[in-house]
Amino acid sequence: MFEPMLKTSVLTVLISFCLFNCKDAKTKSDVIAQTTARVSALPRTVKSPVNNPSTKAKINLGRLLFFDPVLSGNKDVACATCHHPKNGYAEFRDISIGVNGQGFGNSRVFNQPNAIPFVKRNAHTVINTAFNGINMSNHYDPEEAPMFWDSRVNSLEAQALEPIKSLEEMRGTHISETDILNEVVKRLKAIPEYQTLFKAVFDEAEPITSENIGKAIAAYERTLLTNNSDFDKYMRGDDTAISLAEKEGFELFKKVGCINCHNGPMFSDYKMHVLSVPENDKLDSIDRGFEDQFGFRTPTLRNLRFTAPYMHNGTLVSLEKVLEFYEDLSFKKSRNPHIEATQVDTLAQNLTLKMKDMSLIISFLNTLNDDTFDKTVPERVPSGLQVGGNIN
Image 1 (tube, rainbow, N blue to C red):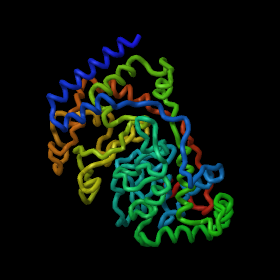
Image 2: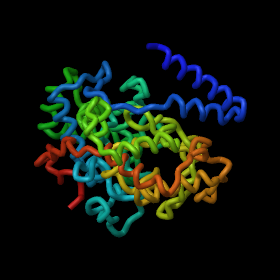
Image 3: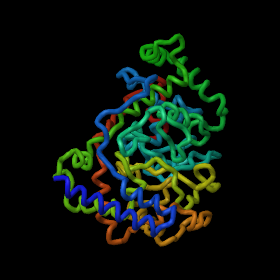
Image 4: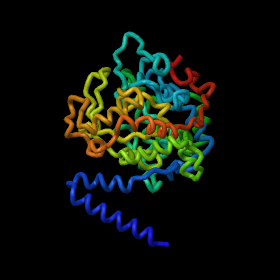
């Protein structure tokens, strides 16, 4: 019974030999990626760091902090302002308006007068960030999970504090970056309800600290999961979970090369890739990305229904536009005047995407949507401020 497998193995070796002797060194790595990249269902459970075990009380505290604008410099922006459950914990905007803003989602505008810039990059969804960094073998370390478009910090605990320190996101101009976390801790200590909640969760002499704020928010964010999409059901053995057209789209997704970067359970290799996404003209300066090389991390493809518009700066408004952009890359066309076509990642240039494939691939991508995530919004927050910030 092993003979067919042996024949297949021999054939694979012969094909690989021919390919490797006809391509340059850079393309060899692409061939390896094409023959080894795979995707799978998300795990049913989530891991937490050893120093931040999850408890119900910690999750509830984290939820309150996530929706409480007391964490922002002007007390007008919460984490939920740009990551609200009604928007799939993302935001239907290209780039966000944080401090000195009013309104919700794509209706949000700056108050006037205004000296605050737009947030530089598109808001990632918080859903499934508990799995950030997961590889094709379903291994991940929650303490080393890459965060943000440039992976500048690791772990949800570290990520939770970064927007608070950012001028345009939550800090504003009245408090310095070095002082803002101390100011937030001081505010929380002055609220009796937070004193009680932190003391119940953290058995420490001084339970209200910036580190514990990050731990509580991270514990809450690890509950925001969508690991039972139609695709997950299909990969777990339910052949009827996706349609024939969606299965055909899945095969095309692999065949044309999308899987080379969008792989693993989260459909991301968590690596930096240089593309040539058009600049967003709302920004005052060029976003040069990771280490000034115009590289950005591969985003997850899960829950794309909730994360439009797309790419690191939200300049591509639909999945059709995204796929057309990648088709252009395969023809060595750059849409960014600051990036030469030769700088674009080889894996993107070697895509074999065609217009006729796009509708089926989009049909497959829709199997990764799952709206069963927790949409609970607190009725009130301990600070007494508006839940979610100035979003009404």
